Amino acid sequence: MSKVNTVLGTIPAEELGFVSVHEHIGYGMPGSELDTTWWKSPEQRYDETVPKLRAFREYGGSTIVDATGICNGRDVDYYRSLSEKTGVQIIACTGFVGGDTALAHFARASVEYLAEVFVHEITVGIGTTGAKAGVIKVGVSRGGRMTELDKRIYRAAARAARETGVPILTHLAIDAENAVAIFQEEGLPLDRVLFGHVDDGVNAPITRDTWIAEQGGRLGFDTFGYETELPDPPFWARPRKERLDHFLGFVERIGIDRVLAAADANCSPLGWPGVKGHTVNYLFEQLIPDLKDAGWSDAQVRTLFVDNPANFLTIKN
Ligand SMILES: [Zn+2]
Image (cartoon, rainbow, N blue to C red):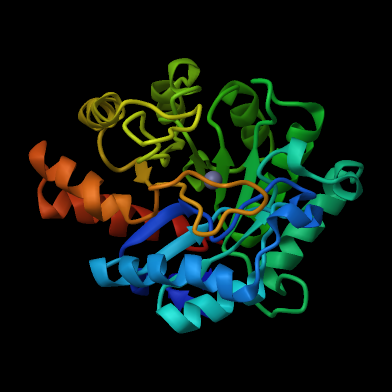
């Protein structure tokens, strides 16, 4: 049986349904939980989050991957409760958004120790929650080049991915030559890696998306909706049409099988106001209508949001 770990248990990949492969229940920089300016009551957190997940379910959404790494506000017991209340299946991750969000305890750790942490969270569970991680998150620190710590985390992730069969999801697809070299040195097939944020407004021009696909990697067009048309767009926003054309052109040239899509939205941001007006439901409210207008069939939409995620997220060992 093809298996995937969700926070409520391991399920067949066929039960994932419509998946958004890169979202956040809540995301904040390490230490934001210590800034009382931003403290929220449990009621506030549920009030901000439950309606978005319920709407996702009503639109036909079924599963989200929470790409919030260790140290960024990951709260697995809370995810379990949300999943039970809304019926949205949630896949939690182990790993780090980037070396620059790993606190000192982890930043000083060896590759062996980090790999052990990741494997434990995938095979035994995250803390005492009993929930097993379904993906490994890694990323490039701010600055544009992989740091020594980023490389240590990528190597540990590659070892954990090989040992457990769980895939890797990256924050940023820049400096991909270094990432690919590490995965190849560790013997990890590149179709187990989703190189994320190839479409964001800052990094898209320097991301070598075609080269990554040629190496066998998967591409995440996963910041859909962060667009300059928003009332208060973030610095990584991009004009809607420009992003859409990038995506459609890529699929035209390379094919649909290597791509995944998501909105990278925050249901209830931690330690910052978030981006108003942007939710995971952008996928249903704007992206899918845009794809239909561009001539996409229901079968193509299904490949993008059902078949490709199931293939990527299935534990392969
Ligand atoms: Zn993200």
